[in-house]
Image (cartoon, rainbow, N blue to C red):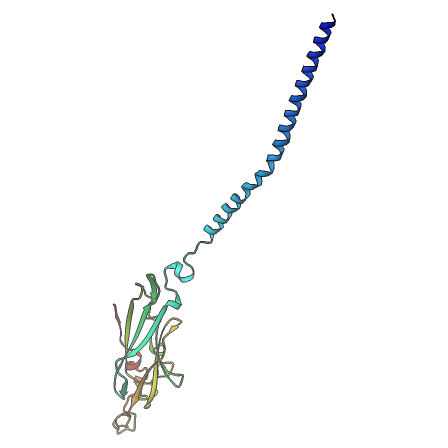
Length: 235
C-alpha cells in the first residue's frame, strides 16, 4: 500500500514536470514569434522603389510643343536672304532669294507657302518696301525637311518704290545702301546688304506735249513691283 502511494506521487510529479516543460516551450515560441514581426517593414523599400520606377516612366522625355506635331521647332529653323547682284541701277530687275534650313536633328515640317513668305527692303532700319504691300493672300504649304536640309524660293523685283497700298511713289529708289530681310511667319533672316547706284535716265519721268507725266499714272498699282514672279527651288 505504501509503495503504491509512492508510485502515484511519482507519476503525478512526472506529469507536472512534463506540463511545466511544455508550457515553457510554448512560451518561448510565442515570444520568438512576436520578435520576428518587426522584420516585415523591410519590404517597404521595395514598394517605394516600385513607385519611383512608375514615376520615372510617367516623366520619360518625349516630343513637346511644335516637335510633338511633326513641325520643326522655331529655334531650329534658320533663314538666309540673298540677291543675284551686289549693285543695281534704275531699270534693273533684282532676284531676291529666301533660303530656309532645318537645323534640327530629326525630319520635320516647315511652313513655306507664299502666304508666309515676306521680302522686306530696309534703309537705316526703316522699311521702304515690303512684298506684302503688293501681294495677294497667298497659299499655305508645309514641306518635310530632312535633318540639315535646305530649300529656297526666289522673287523677281523691279526696284520700283510703292506705298503700303501698292501705289507707285517714284520711278526708282534713290542711290544708297539698302538691306534685304526675308521672313517666314515670325522667323526672320539677318539683313543682306545691296547698293542702288545711279539715277533714272533723263528721258524717264519727262512730260509729254500735253504736260502729262509720261510714266502713265494709271499704272499706279505698280504691276512691275507688286506682281513679281515667285519661283521655288527644291533641293
